[in-house]
Length: 82
Image (cartoon, rainbow, N blue to C red; front, side):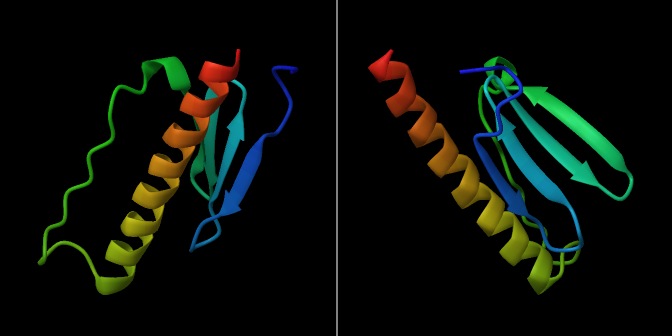
């Protein structure tokens, strides 16, 4: 597996994009991009404040949490195969 090989990708509401590469997760949006090394992800916490977030933002956060959980499960399976 090459370091620049795209493993998975999803479009986010509002035009953003999440892309998974070996060893890193890349978020790209209108304001720029951010890369996070998977080795640095210990946990993900999402907080919901009723007055601060709209219904659509909560749906997006729930989808991202589900994606992160599925990603963690898949990475665990891949780690056990190696």
